[in-house]
Image (cartoon, rainbow, N blue to C red; front, side, top):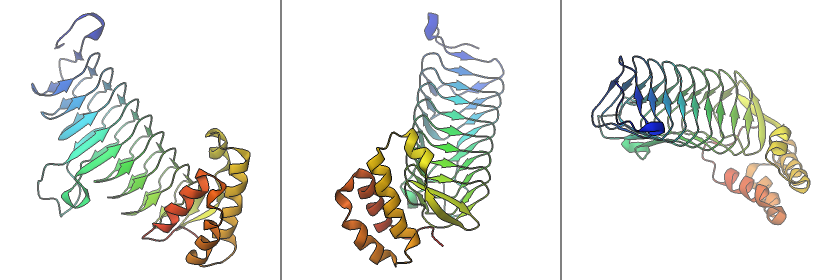
Length: 268
């Protein structure tokens, strides 16, 4: 049953879908067969909800997103501490959320919000647990599992079947190889793989795609040698890195990220 329709701004709802009367669907939203949209859901213009998707809870999805078959967005946390409090999922624009992806809402203990930025690709069966914070241009490959309270900065790529422990942070432009077990923070700009995961070097291809200058790349290689090859303690390595703090924004961000780590960083 199509709703509020005027020309190209029509909202299209398949006759078998169930959309709550109070849900807010923007212009050009389409809802596929057997999908279910809950009362407190808001969906932005041009977003497409595929067959058998469920979008529930206090969930906001931005513009021009695509939800593929069977995705479940906004379901309650898989956390025994959750006691039914109101919590939220916030998803930005132009995301592709592939088949059977699951995204849980937040908890009081984690700030009450699970957030995914814009221009992300979440491949089939990926899971984003309660209170995760995912940035922009992030790729989570098939069956990636983010446990609760995980933070993923912009332009991160996570390979298939990777499991990421609660409260771990993944730094900007890091790449994690498939089947890794990530139990400590992954520094920005790093290539990381293993069981448990360890850093093997700088994400050269990622830096190139992001347009990082040659000087910035050279400084990062130097910083990574200090952090991961010198066998210095983290406090001693950070002291040396702080002498390079004026070398550019990448080094400054690396120093801040490592300095704020509570779980430690992935290194052999």
